[in-house]
Length: 110
Image (cartoon, rainbow, N blue to C red; front, side):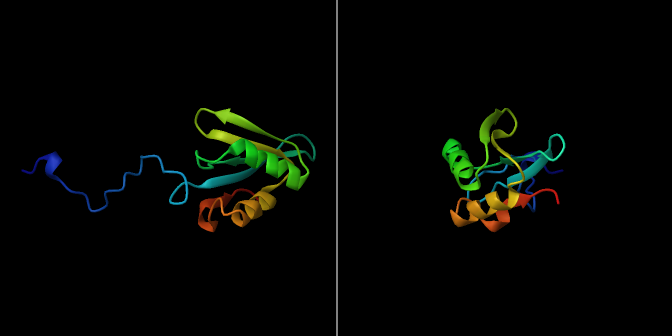
């Protein structure tokens, strides 16, 4: 009987390993969360660790004329929060500046 250490898997990809961020792997998630009434917040998470998230947030605020902040989360890392529904604006910015590829951006909701 073969030892477990001698077994070779057909697909060596570990589904439980965390995806690497950056050009090769991680997804950038754009979500909108309803607050009260007509107010909403757009969250951007999954940006690569080597990016200066504060500068990106500052550029978002200036370009989209909205308020924003960077929140530190234990599970998600750095998350950018922007006032209003800015999903399409953020998507366009990330593609124009070549921060992410089209396949890495996931737009959630409507």
